[in-house]
Amino acid sequence: MQRNPEREKELAALEAVKYIKDGMTLGLGTGSTVYYAVRAIGEMVQQGLNIRGVATSAATQQQAISLGIPMTDTAHVTTIDLTIDGADEFDRNLDLVKGGGGALFKEKIIAAMSKEVIIIADASKKVDVLGEFKLPLEVVPFAANYVMQQVKMLNGNATLRQRDGQVFKTEQGNYIFDADFGLIQNAAALSAQLNNIEGLLVHGLFIQTAHKVIMGDGDGTVVFER
Ligand code: A5P
Image (cartoon, rainbow, N blue to C red; front, side):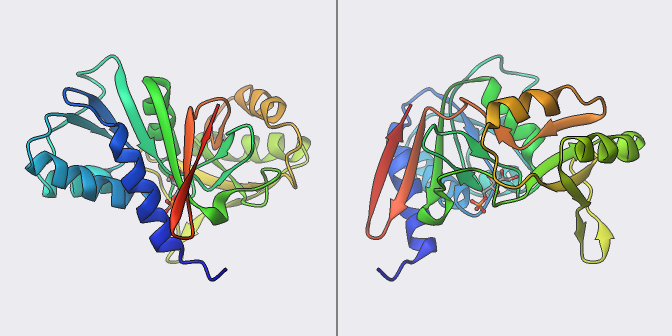
């Protein structure tokens, strides 16, 4: 089958927004797939939907505001009804690798605050085993050498993310390491080990976070549920 990833992203996004109800506080993820969801939510708001959004990145915040979506932030909400976000990989347990865009810190906090998390993705994101996509790690610069060494001890090979010839900095002013652990046979165990490294602010494994993954698949969508 000739696949069109952009169409699959859009189809997944359009299916996900059907779960939005009036009055909800909505977490808005980051990335090229969520772009389509935010665009659709903008249209729904124009047609009278009453929601407020909480963004996981400055880019999403900007897009949402430009579409007239009322926005708030984590200082003003304690729970989020539903979050719609993307992923770099998902497996059959609906465990995820995220952070390709560098927004993983806010994405993890927003996911933790959410009663329900729906992940939207094109079909290329579905994998048998996580780990082909290098795992993003957000690292406080002061701890960079230490974290690099600790990641090596877990058999990870990390490289400092660069963009346009410069060291990439997150919205929090931290580094991203893209870490190759090979195929991750036990994602929960690796997640726990990474959680124990001081100075590693957050990693891109999202374990038991997604309630649903909606995947665009050719001309339709498939919904995976936990
Ligand atoms: C942002 O940091 C990421 O977690 C994104 O959600 C993820 O990279 C998916 O992005 P795309 O929808 O652009 O593939």
